[in-house]
Amino acid sequence: MENIQQELKLIIIKGLRIKDRGPESLQDNQPLLGGDLEIDSIDILQLILEIERHFGIKLVDGEFDKAAWESINTLAATVEDKVTAKV
Amino acid sequence: MTRWYQHRFHTVSTLRLMFWAVARVPLFAQPPIAVVTALVFCYMLKRERKAVSRNLRQITGSSGLALLWKVYRVFYTFSDLMVSYCYVPQATHAQLLSMLMDDEYGAATIAKYLAAGKGLILWTAHLGNPEFASRILEVHGRPVNVARVVEDQPAEKMLRDKMVSERLRVVDLRAGASATIELLQALRRNEIVAIQGDRVYNPRHSIDVSFFSKPAAFPLGPFLLSQVSGAPVMPGIVIRQGWLRYRMLGGDPILPGDSGDLEADQRAALTQAVRFLEAQLSVHYDQWINFFDFWRVNATD
Image (tube, rainbow over all chains, first blue to last red; front, side):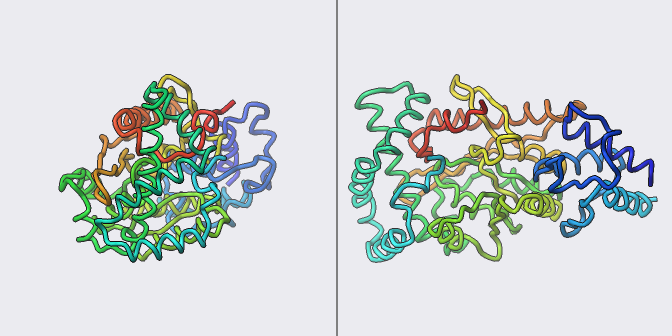
């Protein structure tokens, strides 16, 4: 889980082209939607693309699960579930 | 002025009056009436007329009376579009097909890409009759999801409500993340998504592309959606060929490359789509229904 969180932080920094801060500045409970990262509807697509390619999973395969996008922690848990289900 | 429907006659009562009148006028009598109403609106809507003039001057290089005539024809096309709201929303598929001047409208290409199971993104524009374009796609037996911003404007909602059906959904982009996820889900169900490519709703995700020799911003969203879903982007428009008679023109479907640079791939794909639009506008400039100064509004600086 911790590894996934670190990887997600890297993906967020790279995917959102954040230049003025590094992955270490992101907290595990960092809010994703409505937080200071200001992730909008297109950013979400960008992150889905990067996460799905990186982990080889389908992150979105049902209704929009807003709770999964609450924080890096919740997103990591969702990714972990999908990765486990894939194996 | 950034939206075509912000002119002062875009009200529920005006629309109701128009729908009431159109229902009582036989089809053959509508074009001559439209000749007059287009002239009246072209005269009355001074701000919109000026904006259309600037757009068409950029596209055609015309000036003087030649330009004014072209501007008038945009208003005439707009009359056809508004009257089509009385026919297109409730038309059966057979009736829609009978309104097409040409049996070949890219149906085989669309069917081929839908057979791949990854959905299809129609990249269209406010050119000709985009509402007809959305409905004709239903013929392929897959739900059509029209992505657009639905403003809090009663007349705009009225037109939206006329168009929606079991097979045609409007996904309001103001819903944010849930709207984009809904579009992604639709493509993953092998459905069709129609997006207006010449409207920038989120300037942060648009880039400047040379458009008739002048930079203009276009959204990258459709191409990002294509990268995530694997659905090809098909540039396509429905142009008017006579009163309530149309022809669909489709470009080659575009799949963003896989160079490893996602943004460069999106940019290349967008440029290809914009070149398609440019080619169509060179011929059908009088059907580009943008009553605002396109290059000024679609500037990223």
